[in-house]
Amino acid sequence: MMMEVLIAEKRGFCFGVEHAIEMAQRLLDEGKEVYSLGPLIHNSHVVKRLSDNGLQVVESLDQIGLFTCSCPENPSKPTPTVLIRSHGCRPEIMEQIMQRGLELADATCILVKKAQKLVKQLFDQGYQVIIVGDPNHPEVQGVVGYAPNVVVVAGPEDVRTMSQKGKIAVISQTTYSAEDFGKIVGLIAMKGFEEIKVVNTICRETSRRQASAVELCKQVDVMFVLGSHHSANTAELAQLCKRNGVMTYHLQGWDEFEPQYVEGKSIAGVTAGASTPDWIIQEFVERLANIK
Image (tube, rainbow, N blue to C red):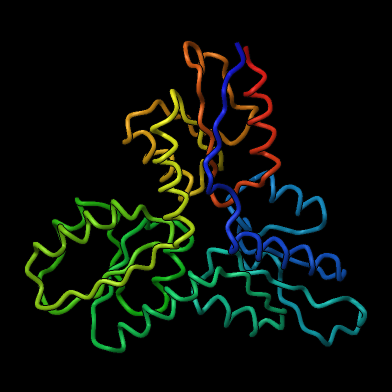
């Protein structure tokens, strides 16, 4: 008997990721010398394909080196282009790019940009800004640069140590679980702040993928969530599926699959994070469906 495989209605690439990849490929097609400040998206397969086409991934501007447009030794050499990845960056990084005479190409997701602007606006209105999310995630590391002393709350334990003074504004990492964000906001509300303003900055596409995954969990014996182990939204999907009572495996692709994952199972569900390309999903589904 063949394995029955069901696929989540909402899965895979979001518009922010598609925009970043299209921008990178267009710049490369134009013959530009393109550097991505950190991995463009959290998917090693996609990053490798772009790297094979000429995209160079660096972790700091110092790896690109100082550059001036007036280069007498090689005046025809193109000005290096620094591509800001979909997660965004701190504002001073963009300033440094311009100061060094480098070209700036900004592939920051529009929803991340919205969060960045919102942080500044809230601070200007007199709020202490709180962002609920992973302090080590590049999106969060970038967003906190748009106002002084932004506080990052990673979980309930951070709420317990928060000061209870003044008025605060709470936003979320765009890929955070809506369910978990609600719980954190509830805990903050119990702290007794003078004023709390909550702005929902969670990406709708993230919420739709989560809702679609939960619905699929009700119909299957085992769930496979495809995407990078460094992808926050993919990890959230996997945790959400586990909390809904189904055996769940977070895999980057078919090469991480083990036959014992489906022993005794007849119906499998597949979903994928926002940085996972269709070809990885398709390959996984086809191979899984052929298991007897």
